[in-house]
Length: 177
Image (cartoon, rainbow, N blue to C red; front, side):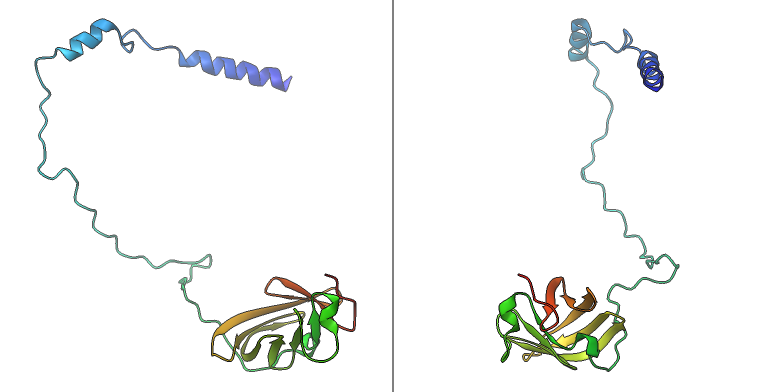
């Protein structure tokens, strides 16, 4: 029943549109008459065909959902602290990362105030967020380059996600790769 109703409404809408009237149809006589017009329309040409640019609108402060001013470069509140003990361990992406000794391969070693990889170590400069199973901090490498690191624990705290990369806790569960 519904498809029949929809088709009926569509047909009714199309018939209501109708076709072009005789005045709207272009014929050879109308084309010749328009080409042989002796009177040109009265238009004034401007010396500057481009209109002047619109004056800039006064800048309105952008408001967020709570009607507070939205600030582009918001500085996050930072506190001193350490990386929580739940995150401190040797983490690997493949089984060979979990060998005893120096940090090798794609493994990372998280301590109270640093994250070490085979090729670099970053030091904690400030805590941006410390929540159960989630930690964010500002870290700097040896050259002074700073970046944000986001750490998340899942899988009974045996899986670590660091800035989108997944690691497994060495010694607790065999890493897969």
